[in-house]
Amino acid sequence: MALTPVCVEDFEQYLKASVSDFFWEYYRSGAQDEQTLRDNPLAFQRYRLRPRCLRDVSQRDTSTSILGHRLAFPVGVSPTAAHCFAHKDGEVATARGVSSVGSAMILSMWSNRTLEDVAASVPPDTPLLLQLTILRDRSRVEAAIRRAEAAGFKALVVTVDEPMLGKRNYDNGKEVDLTGIKFPQVLRSDEQFSRDQIQFSDSRTWNDILRLKELTSLPFVLKGILTAEDAVEAVRHGAAGILVSNHGGRQLDGVPATIDVLAEIVNAVRGSGVEVYLDGGVRKGTDVLKALALGARAVFIGRPALWGLAYDGANGVEKVLGILKEELSLAMALSGCSSVADITSDLIAVPSYCKL
Image (cartoon, rainbow, N blue to C red; front, top):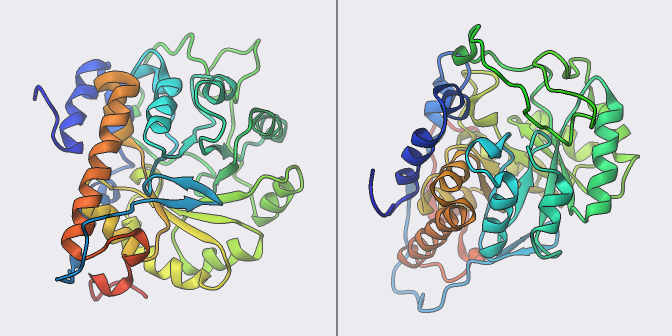
């Protein structure tokens, strides 16, 4: 293994080396043939940058904001489950790494550490958002919302592309001892985890979003939207933000890479005030630049945060995010941009097959 990682993908080997084969496949894998999993990072390479020259880029401002909360740069951490298998401190370490660089974190409802522990581990102005899975047992979701409010979370991120789990071939009948796994946002204190215990809601509709909104004043972001039609529905049902996501290629295989549908969704919500973010396949500063040029307000990373966590806990997460910040700043300079506001659509050439 490389002694000192120099790019984000250098960190992946540390996760593979630190977890069992089962959990490596759990973190790494996608649905079925993994077409979407592979395409997420590859799709960024099909976009070309159109740099402008002879502009003063001696001072560069990478800051932005999401839902009114300032970020030092437009890269946050997307929700992924079970960080304690990558590092003993789990989501607490991830949150500390995120906070140290002035970024934002979406905590998975399927985290191993309590949302209260995560919130207590970082300054109160750190933008923490809680991801929600719509379960058949709505009382569990409602309880998580109440706890998030009390702990000072800034928003709720509802996963909308998960009426049931996608087919993941790594999990084909393997017997794994899951005794003692804790999901404290989902399980009650007297419950032990079993695979069939918690049922996702396959009867969810847009009315469920309205019902959840009645429970809280926190803003809602809808995660998993891939079409203009659903983006319009999100606006109509009061979303404050949309996270363009295909679940890291883990749900419906064969859907587009997120970067390929980003412009379509940005255009569908234009003028509504709804913010648009992206996750899926972000590995380089130029990936961030391309997403911002297509209209994303910020991007989020999933697996790379886990890679950094396995490398060195909070310091590893900080290092992964720091590399992306440095790469983005360099890409901005070489493209003629001195601030995030300078990153506009004329900076990028879009493949002809994309729907704009």
